[in-house]
Length: 283
Image 1 (cartoon, rainbow, N blue to C red):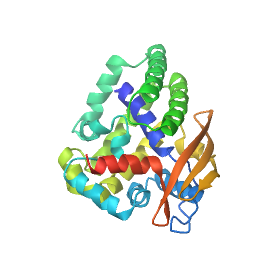
Image 2: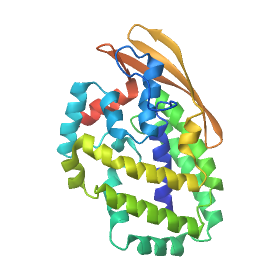
Image 3: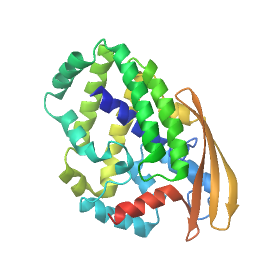
């Protein structure tokens, strides 16, 4: 379970940091917004767990409608299926929400991980190496994503090496918080995700994400506070394409990456988001 939590932590970090950060929910993501403003606006939604608004603004309206249909037909859960554990999200939520899950998961923790600080530090190191190799050579990532995600994985692995993952009291608190949040979401099966559709599904995932970030903070990973250090600047713009450079601190390390943007019908979008969304809609 701890291994899955660690991957979930890394996955959340990747999603939340995918296009930088902003200072709050304000700003304009309309036709007059610059590429850097769009980056800040989108990530503001992620920081505030406003995933349904993020999905509406991350892609053109016609693509959003296609994604909603794909959700309802069970063909995608974009953008959630971009996470390393995305395919197993309903099962993970179901396991957390099941009656008596707190006691069951606590017994698993006690049997396998309690007092195993050295082994968990080694596991974090190994998972960091594996994750770096995967994003470097496998998966459907752009070169920009590979460069960005490699930095995030290294930072997250470093956090895992020093985080108190074997602490029983923290584990008990985390299990209780995540189990309660999973139950409140009601998204504990493939059918529940399909019935919800993209807007309601992502809206209901927001409180679970908030609970998950509070758990991470208790383990020393303060995602929103780190992302708030970001500086986003327009590096280059040529016609309907642009490059936005992002620099920020994450898990004690400096992250420096560039995001590709493109303009469609007068509005700027993150190119990697568009590419993955189009693939998800036609899967």
